Length: 428
Image 1 (cartoon, helix red, strand yellow):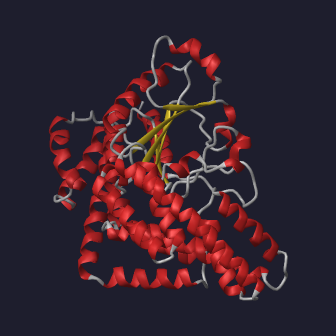
Image 2 (cartoon, helix red, strand yellow):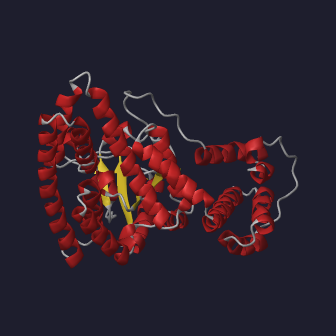
Image 3 (cartoon, rainbow, N blue to C red):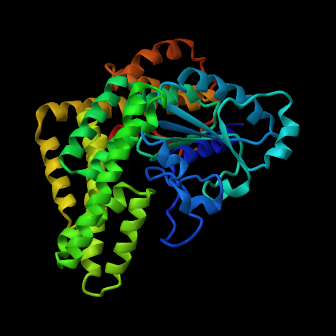
């Protein structure tokens, strides 16, 4: 019996901790990898060239992808759980999408009056992006579109989602932040930083109520930015005629990266294609595109920094350095990391955050062991929190857990894998 439980727990821990290996560039389909951008979703495969993917439109929201089958009883039980989560958090910056490999017509026969409150992607196309072998399953995506976790919906779903909301708060949950973003967008437009202005205004337009004053203002501002970008594109074309290729490449790259999915970005793409056809100009154009992409990553990292989410900020800046070295954006990212790392208050905040994350990880492990009645192992992790991180928020949660935890009957223990030992956590 104990050996069987170890088999179960290793499966649980492996699914929690391991991330898939990224496929080589150019291979399809690309499987999701924890810590990387989640593969985007489109209602129809042939719609990819007709606009942004659905997940990109949800940037600024925490996204829950709920994978289910209507002919699976556990999935249908989870539908009720997800409906409640949608009711509680759907207007607080959390987006939920159902994901079923079934055709809707076939699924209707199994619904039996159950109502799904959130949007659903029906059909087998989702399996090209998300390798889900067992249902139900939840994939959790942060406000920057990064896949951060995957788990069974019965495994502390709401607690995990709320924890992610604390780590990467949804802008839509804070009207003051939306107003501030709109103000920043206007300032960026006045400063002719059209790409950044569009990014900020688009974020407000996506998250604000469409018919609200804020939503209408964002829509109007977006129209103004696009018109300004058209004039900016004309400046790029004039720069090409004058053989000022540095200026032309910079403008075209920023329009292409920041205003992706708009007609003006499509026109910029045509100009980029022509420049890329010139052997001498191709490296210059590529570097400008890399720099624009790095700037966009830096913008996201700067938002984390402004929100005092310093760990996420440093990760964002490092991503720029890793992906786009030898660009101005990478140099700016290095300076930003140095600034964050040298500030004593920032160091203290990062230390506290890491304590919270480690305590949350131990709490999760303890709960997993308790769930399969391995109470001694659960107690070890709970006591680690109590002894090492008594100031963490998780410490308040383990008091009742420790008090109510049954004593495990003594049995012969098998040799335990090193990866599940609390001692390994102590060293980490």
